[in-house]
Image (cartoon, rainbow, N blue to C red; front, side, top):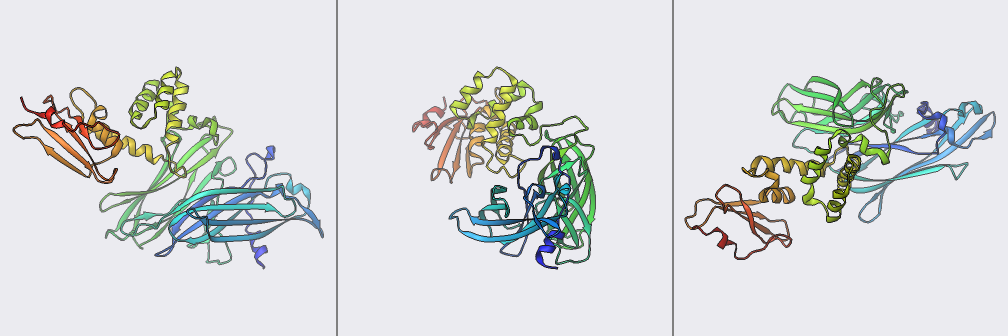
Length: 459
């Protein structure tokens, strides 16, 4: 069997969810990163396309088509090519009736790459019709997996996982399993079961007999709708984590799959997350699927009250522009406010490949800390000067506390060594009620008063 026949044997056939629409030729893709060696990460690039949209020409008793597919990785910093694979893939049918419904071909490219930021390009084009083609460009940030703690690979969402004998000719074989990926990440009507594959590393860094796993499916507003928990023995340093979850009872919408490993020694948790979609037309919609214009409806803001929306925007004002604040003041409907707040944080999401907005999570983690640490009898912690500085600039590198000087009221000096070559913020308790206000800062954009000590003189 030649390489083309092997590729053809790997054809994954599934009926399209939208077969009646006969969509344009489009590539669907997904990416997962796994541990390679001490210097490389192994990355798999899964892709799929509809073979019924190709041009077939008579050849002997059959109709035949052919595509050229390629994946290229370029270093983002200088656009230099570091890796490339390309294949010519033939397809054959006996008659045109086999092309009346969508047929999806799925394949995988694998690469060993050093840590760096890359731009990946995938191109698929029909040899018989130059107008039938599609291309995708995606930014890929590759980092080595941690060695000192438990680490998890990315999650590969799949249409099936079966344990088989070792088969080097099977492109979907790894670690005793045949894992057929689902690059569309669409489940439900035609694919009622979600299969998942990932790898856990460094399990024996802590000496204990067991560790715990939890597979969670959450809806668009973060509510858990399915979860599976297991207790597992630490047999090897690394382990393959596979499983299946039925999603045929879930409503149409966007969901998040989260796999958590909990270390039984110190209870630390390690997680890997991937977003997916469910299409169940017989059930009422839960969220709007795959629609950029209505994506706010699939966010947490869809169920928040106007009071909650206003409070969150108010707490976000420290990093808002004047234009954003002025526009928000003019909105009179909750729908407009929801959309504004959604776009506010979407624009600040630096890594849209993950379902979480890490910048927003860090910001409100600081808000919560400020409320706990700097609350006064008059104001919530995030509204105080110390709270604002902590939220905007993070944890100081050093804090000097002067609480018992005979000739001065209490004050604090916060130092940040990595901002503008090193800056300080000086807060004073002028009232005696632990309400420290900003008196002076060496930061170029903050309050500046060289004579700040006069405000602290004891009566």
